[in-house]
Image (tube, rainbow, N blue to C red):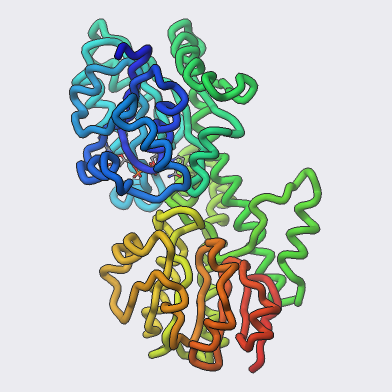
Length: 458
Ligand SMILES: NC(=O)c1ccc[n+]([C@@H]2O[C@H](COP(=O)([O-])OP(=O)(O)OC[C@H]3O[C@@H](n4cnc5c(N)ncnc54)[C@H](O)[C@@H]3O)[C@@H](O)[C@H]2O)c1
């Protein structure tokens, strides 16, 4: 078949896979290829067992794979053959050298730029889809123009705003698509070419254009604002616990103000995931680099409140379980960093379970999708840990249930049945405020939630 456009994505991760699957789904006349250095990941994309769980993803992959959607490790040839290249590699926080634990580690991104330069035999549009520090496109352009040949590269910024757990819906019905380009003739031409892809299914009013630097910075700022809302409500949850106010009632009263809005106001054990923390730290690093120390301190406090919330949670558990967890069996309900994903990167569950293990608690970890990742995350941890998917089985004989992920499954469990099988006095620590507190208290549990008075029989 003669395809109208040939698109390549370098990086077959949580963003590259779903976002390219959506383009292939919406544009059956385009050929979309996703490449990765990780051959295990590519094998998984080509198998019935995809590399991670994302609602609706399997359905789209099955419809387009082998028709106009391909997964490959042949990076060199694919760079040669494609005209439009999305770069979707990982940009984690640097854990060495200058800027360690703050700045973005750009080694994977730079390697990709050099690969594109080395293997290209014709001009191409290169699109930054990964999240990068502002002005990174400039570095990409410098690398790509270093050979001074006839081949021209136009670099665009097109950050991805999808969220894991709702990625397919977010990609199909995004709030906006952002395209940053140079305002030059070739920059505007490349921008039009990318706009035409998205216009296949997204109304033009939702396709926003800007200069490249605004586009790069907007992604960092969007994540910083989202994380800041989580930390804001969590900071108030601490005050609620001291004053008998209820955080859900406060959030409802505050969120009904149109200027504030209701979303992202659920108090809990804090944000996780691969992006929020790394993107804020990246923003903090950039501010410090430009001498904006007060601005840096403001955003850094968002991360500090997140850590404080998790420390508080552990301290409350210790306090209410008679100051010792040693030898107590504790059932962890949920290890994924949020519901509807198997991703556990930066999940609060990692920190919390490690702390519980250091208190010599025995852990039984349950999660409907993330047990494989949980086992990998805790592989080096010392202590007694079991992994049991069935929550009823996992809770049997435990002293406490600890809800760490907002899976809807945990709202609907038969807590009466669970209570009967547990050691008494039985405790629930609800780190996501999803359990019916009154009902569980009536069953006999001692119930502790975030930002709410404890309901206890003790
Ligand atoms: N995960 C999210 O929810 C999300 C949302 C929006 C934006 N982002 C951003 O998107 C980018 C990718 O995130 P992700 O979660 O998909 O990461 P990921 O780690 O899941 O995937 C990145 C992939 O790139 C591959 N890779 C690295 N270097 C390569 C190279 N030189 N050639 C080929 N493949 C290479 C890795 O093997 C990996 O499979 C990051 O910048 C992230 O900040 C992520």
